[in-house]
Amino acid sequence: MPFNRLNCIDLFSGAGGFSFSAAQAGFSVRLAIESDAHAARTLSDNIGLFQADPCAVLNRDITALDPEVLAAQTFETRTKCDLVLGGPPCQGFSTHRLKNAGVGDERNSLIHTYFEYVKAFKPKAFLLENVPGMLWDRHRDYVEEFYQTGRASGYHLENPVVLDARDHGVPQRRKRVFILGVAQEYSTENLKWPPEPTHGSPVLQQKQSNLAHWLSCRSAFLPTYENDPNDVHMKHSAEVVEAFRNTPHNGGSRRDSGR
Image (tube, rainbow, N blue to C red; front, side, top):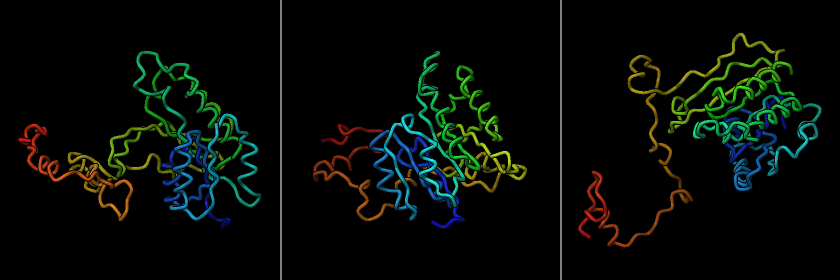
């Protein structure tokens, strides 16, 4: 492990979206924790595709682990944690919860579990992701406590920002809240946060010529590579293929094909 390489850990890692992005940005993901067995297996099977450095993927309940022990096991004397990533479960904060549903949801407190790991690993910075509903007034106590704990632990916390994935080159309209914290020993004078959008609507492009157009879902599926397991199609009979061919393209159904 090169000692000048930036290191990070990924909490509530899911299938590894944050880990993949961190590796693309030049980080070495040293530890990932995910309670869902299928997601953890996906990350474990694929992390070697985007980084050569070893990563411990733990399929465990994060609340049953000791962050101090994990910090000592993960980082040796000459290596340190530079960044903590994580997107705690968002169901309790979801905007789909009606009226006051979600208030008091035990999963909401996992943002504090997240910070227990920040305190144990002592990174230079941390980045937390969640749904916009996290900022609703009904959840204010959780967010305020998170900020108070962060500042008391020696971090400068930027205000929460809501970013839309489609504004940054992802073919999906997906808004998420990001909270960035930087250790107070490091200056944030030249910090560029939040990141400037790289893509936009045609109207916005007229005002900002440097923006590319939002990507369509087509870009997520093309081109495919040989033997891509996500590009396996059903083998329809000639009769079914002909029925599809004769189906009107302007919203018609199979019964309109004459078969």
